[in-house]
Length: 365
Image (tube, rainbow, N blue to C red; front, side):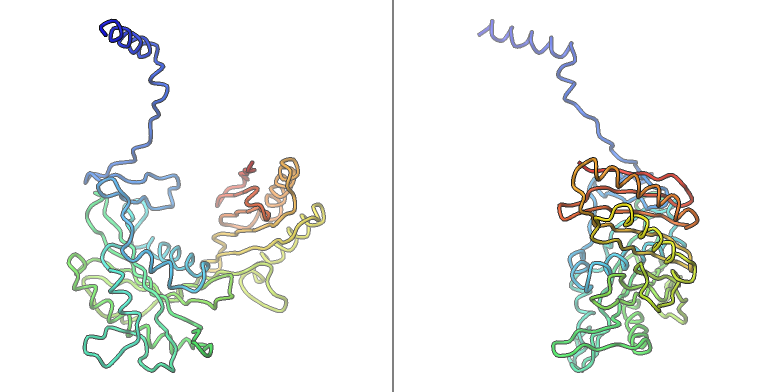
């Protein structure tokens, strides 16, 4: 036994001294630490919020599942979430604030607000009581922002989603902007009054965004149409500021006039599409989605469905697409992304950051 123990100890010392045991040790990024002691996710992009991890864990929203269920397609969901972050930038700067998922409004509270009003004195429903009228208020999203210490709440943002189309059990109803806004004013007033009574939210700034959800079959998704900021404990909103943002599908339908036709982006996209189809005809689809803010392109995403499968085919095609992006969209501001895929999955990805000319590409195995 003594010989065995001595032998094992000797082997361990030898391995340790040679460094063999340490070869299996990999360091990880522990994240940045705020002055308040919380760990953050760190940052790869200076235009994106760092998130705070309380007690070393990312804090999800209590209403996270509800947020994923209520909007009628993924395009609306993405625009609703991303748009609220953008509206928050002016009030809660990326450099001086940390992001946290909503922690104050529970799923049950939001569900009760989304119901129809009833005669019950305990009813909290903010949608029309009459079953023949459409559901207007569809979803509520909360984002929290922390100060530089990573612990003190700087304020919150609330996104209110309203329907432009309601899908009833027997008929589909179109909701006018006036009808929607009448409900929106009442809804926001009620929610804001309740929120101000929550411990910690009495006086903080609250960014409010009004999102108009598009129809189910609209692959562009909806847009924020109004915004405001409630400060100094306010519970009433006197005025909303228009939000000039829009999501458009490319190519634009014939006879339609919009931002992409006015600034020539639609023509550039058609030129791009025709160029790659003429040299690489075995494609099943080329489409685009563009996001405008104040009539300026913020992001253009192009999706290409190919019938190329070998690594050499995909690599050659990706290089050609990259050169066309570089040439055709050279004067287009904003981020450009190209996603190349087939029925087997994603094949390649290209991107160009805002205010740069370099095209980054990656071909998947």
